[in-house]
Length: 458
Image (tube, rainbow, N blue to C red; front, side, top):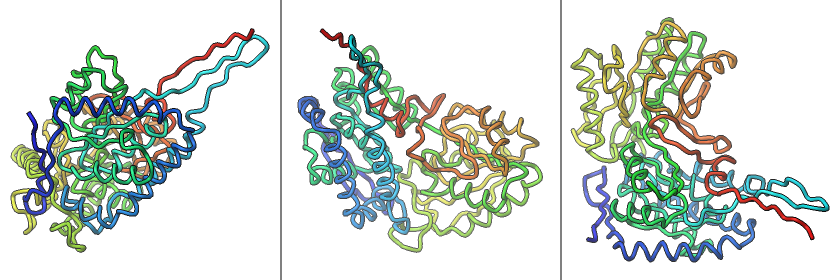
């Protein structure tokens, strides 16, 4: 049965956009068109595919003035931050720059008897299931290298950001990428699972919840379809006794609160060396109290609503449970907190790992801060999590950071920064955060398969 997907705006609770889902027959037809179109797309010269993707990225940039308020209406990010085009362009252009070397044949030998080499070849059709929190940047992580590598792409975007897929399709089609090579599709969960189970895709990249990742694995069971999964996170920051305190506070609190805490690699728990703890908390509280919660269309707003009331309700529940169990809240409710999507930020101390706010993904503007005695205690606490996306270490010593980093179970370790995605490095996670890797050379490896050529000369 055809469903209607509705984006409920966090600004005022109105229906901002709605789209009908494809029927199973229509979805199968779209996948077949993609499969057929991919063959011709892969035959185009690599340089031509690179240029077309770059042109599509530029076309998105030309739409940015319209995109920024659309994002505010769809998921609540304040317009003052200008959207996502900077990161979108950086990631796409980096993957375009390294494509020739990343996809180059691995030459083994070419002598009188044999020519031997390994070539990277596309999977065929790649399904990208993208989230709403950074809807353009998370999508382009896979879309750009998948297209450049010669795959066709079907993009299924989150209901909360229905218009993003359409914008990307419009831009790429204007740039000259064939409509069947890049498709934005509206699918319900059952149809998505049916397509995966029917081997409609050579690879599926999913960014979302742990439950969603399990559903993807279940749908793909027995098909041998490749999966890339970026799921939940509970990323820690650790401030060592030799850290630059002001820089650590400013960066980690921004990492916890930016985008109303709705960042894949946002900071959700902070551990501070005993000697710096009191000063860190004092400075952190001052920063958060100065935020302005309000309508994201207002240029003065620094903290917008969460994308949906149910997300804000989960944060409220985690905070109230923690306070009932002995945590100390430091931020009074903001006047603009309406009990719905508009949520006051919060800093909690006297927290423990028995509290959900220090264990479960919050994905909102709340952070717990704990005092630690030494590196060993900090490492134990950072590893006491089912998730492993990033960790942020603050110290004046690279050697110390490396020694601690080697002990942390995570996908990326930062020193003296956080909440950033470097396209030259593999974006990956461990434990319940998922499997696979995006961007970098490894991103191309995951979006292609190796094919060996062993040619005996006459």
